[in-house]
Image (cartoon, rainbow, N blue to C red):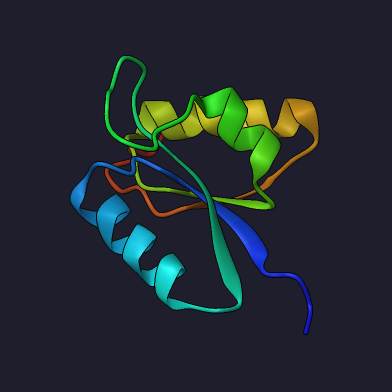
Length: 94
């Protein structure tokens, strides 16, 4: 059996972030590599954005348009991990 895909959840303390954590944990093909939220957030098991980028194959993002843009730039600059953006509320310029 192949190694599970390592997933990190951005916005892990929000409603959709919590649901994504549950979905990842429930799927044997996936491994929850990291959970992170906005800087300064506290919670059991939370890591920094940079730690999450180093640990994951894929980031699933449910944050804000501005945070999604920053995360996309960080992923692009380091050459990964892959990024799936589920955030809403983007305007035409974003």
